Length: 94
Image (cartoon, rainbow, N blue to C red; front, side, top):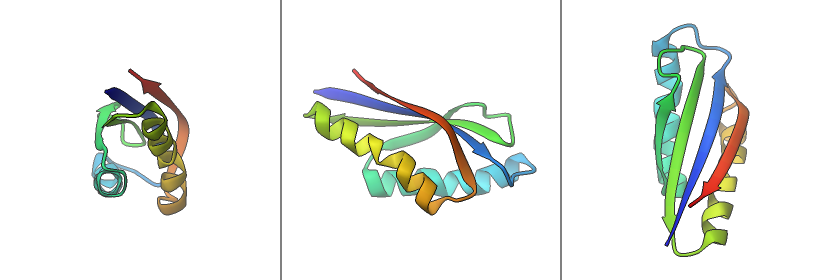
């Protein structure tokens, strides 16, 4: 069994309040769960209105599948969520 984690450091350029941030972040987390079957949540920078750290977790039988699935997420965000900038991301396999 393989545990894979994706950590995304995100910036919201158009947000001016925590309410704006939530209005973008909540649909993103829902889409990630639906498209990639991952658990996704904001794990840090909760009090900042223009930044967020999002974690995505996936359990799989194969390391290659887990890594490939998580590697598609940054491209998905860039394509469908143009108001979110990805500052950096990392994938960890446990």
